[in-house]
Length: 280
Image 1 (tube, rainbow, N blue to C red):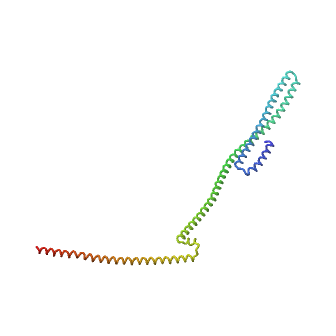
Image 2 (image 1 turned 90 degrees about the vertical axis):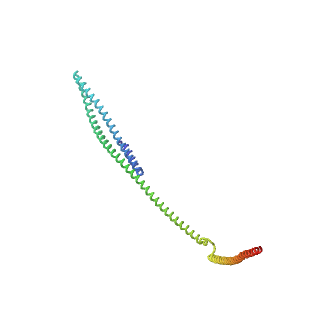
Image 3 (image 1 turned 60 degrees about the vertical axis):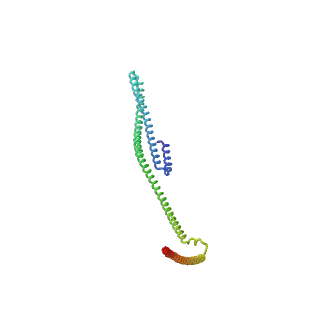
């Protein structure tokens, strides 16, 4: 990771630390996981770049080794032709190439060591990322469960408060209903006893008492009148009854006289029959 990349990551981390205070922890964990994966990707990219540099040095080494073999053959050919000067020049170039090969081998070895270190760090980082991913998912599940539980608790608390308010409302409604029922029963009772009309009247208690007395006197007078009328009616009935009885007695006497007359007539008839017999 370069200096600019590290500085950029530090700045982003600071900003994210401020922003994450008000963010969802699950989102924060996901963001941190993505950051670790970016770091892992940077390490892999560094290993790839280092491997590329090593491969270039190895290619350069092989070319130098080929030149060494070439210069060795040139020196042999020059010796066969008794050209020691050419053979010496070929061996000098061979020596230079051998020196370069030794330097390249040292650089290649250093790059290999760095590559091994980076690969080891990459494996360690990758393992940490996998562990973090497992913990991240566990923490997210725990957070979501806690959040759901908190929402349920808040809902239950709100429902409890609301139910308490509803209960109080019902109690107040019951109290008002009972009060209204009692008032209605009292009004009915007052109306039945007439007290309600007295209370609603604008007359004083003295006026009402005088009216009651007057009403009682009128009732007594009417009662006496009724008794007098009934007494007169009884006298009239008794007189009529006496007249009827006298009439019935006269009628009975008359009937008795009428009954006796036929008897006299029969004796006269018998006497007349006797006289007729004597005349015969």
